[in-house]
Image 1 (tube, each protein chain N blue to C red):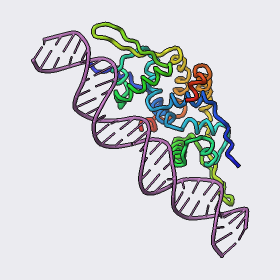
Image 2: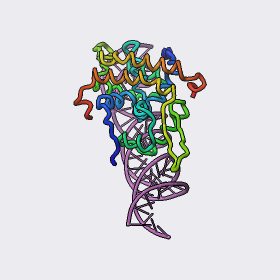
Image 3: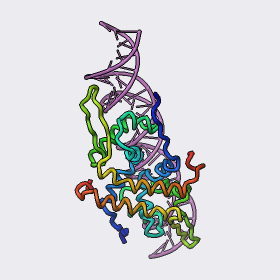
Image 4: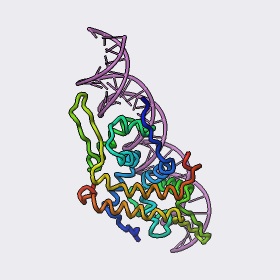
Length: 111
Length: 111
DNA sequence: TATACTCGGTTACATAAAGTAATTTACGCA
DNA sequence: TGCGTAAATTACTTTATGTAACCGAGTATA
């Protein structure tokens, strides 16, 4: 009588849990262009607050997707970049872009 | 002096806004197997509440990803299935699955 | 030497989204 | 009549996110 719990792949679930948090995908997408500094990411994504950006970058760093590099210059420069694991998300991003191009109408996009 | 706002593709942003909401991807993933009823989806995704499932299904229906079909039997049966737009998300799901298999360690997945 | 400004955040507080549990409506069953 | 199910919805609580001010180190400006 119990439900048919076709167990979902735990890795898949973990990946979704990581990637489908608000802002995460857009941050990764931005970093596909190359390393960026905190304020650059913040400014390039409207409505993304420094608070959440800070949280997301920490999560992504911990997950192994993003690398935080400190350049001990004066003043210090900190750059965020994608690891190999992060760069390997590129095909996924392409898929989303293709799907969006095929199916999302411009009027809908405005909302 | 202003930020370099490399404007993001609005369709991409809209797609992300739709797909990266909590539970959305998992619901679509479930429906890739075929049509399902409300309670079946609810039971197959632990911690997903009926309230949120109801919201998500409405959003997805409105977006054209999911089709809600009412079978006027006694008692009435309602099934949710993917439209062509929804089924076209399959490659993306595969990509996520591949990425997860490659990069997510089982220990991490438990969390 | 103040003064103001930038970067990379953090903190305190307000609002929005999600989780929990009870309720609803329409029907079937004993 | 009383109980149960499917598909939701409502009221209430908890968590996540948004907003804005602030911090410390360094830098340029007057």
